[in-house]
Image 1 (cartoon, rainbow, N blue to C red):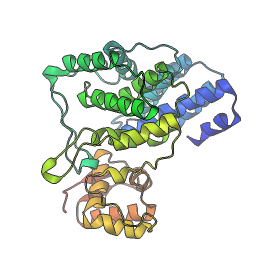
Image 2 (image 1 turned 180 degrees about the vertical axis):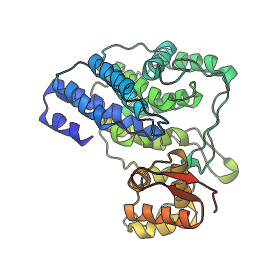
Image 3 (image 1 turned 90 degrees about the horizontal axis):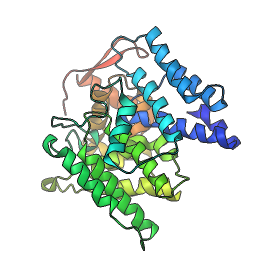
Amino acid sequence: MDNFEEYIRQGEPNKAEKAKDWKTAIGLQKVDGLKPSDYLIETARQNIEGDITIEEVKQRIDSYYKQHPIKNDENRTEEADKVSARITEILSEKTFTFSPAEYLTIHRRLFQGIYSHAGKIRNYNITKQEWVLNGETVLYASAESLKATLEYDFQQEKTFSYRGLSQQEIIEHITRFISYLWQIHIFGEGNTRTTAIFLIKYLRKLGYKEVNNDSFAEHSWYFRNALVRANYEDLSKGVHKTDKYLTSFLLNLLQQENHLLKNREMHVHYVSPVNDTVNDTVKMQNDTVNGTVNDNVFYLIKQNNKITAVEIGERLNISLRTAKRKIKELKEKGTIERIGSDKTGYWKIIEYKI
């Protein structure tokens, strides 16, 4: 990611715009715990420099994986590379139609050849365990109602008038629309990345030409967790749906505000420290009382068995030292086991013991 900052800082318009698109595309892969290859990064640099077109980038990536097939690609590197290139292509295009067909088309273009259901409405019901919900799931729309629900939400937004609203009110409305759209979860996989790209294109249509895509590039996982919290409630436990996290994300995106985007604060068991300036150790003691940190680390490992302590620290906004300590505790409890080396191995889930 840092490789692209030089182009953005130099300010050469064409290169800076391409660099921003690539940075957003690569950052969005973190939504599903994916990381593009060094080959993709180098190929992207050639595109930014103007040496090759985006079409040539896609051709090179396709050719590369035909020549270097990856068996049992648990890290889904090929997916990350191909989808990053496709996102960059879509973001570079000056076209957009606000319609369900456009939404479906974006998904098809992103995942064609990767998912068999690319661009298709799912015909089965789904649940997804979320670490931010301590393993619970959002209730997504049923397969029988997907098409009708999607068309209804688009029609409501299409006829909505933004006239007379303040910027705050506009952003709050967009927050609700994109939250409803995501909650439908019309695809089997790839909903968040598709929704993010659709949102960026829609915001441009609404006149937000200079969208600060750093929010997507650097906080894409926060974006997904914010969508989760906007669509989950358990009144028996005092957990309410809230748009505040998603609104903070959009205020940073559109108004260049500087809200702190911390994933752990969205966890349903999070307890805010009395003094925000207390050190990391005190914060972790506070979290541990509720079992939050061990739960979070476990669910991250369960979602991605190749995840590193560094990545866990980044996602939970905790120090590397704390992340390593929590991993060690899970190992000592017999919850997880390391298979192979630290560099090339993976985590095996044994049993979760509170």
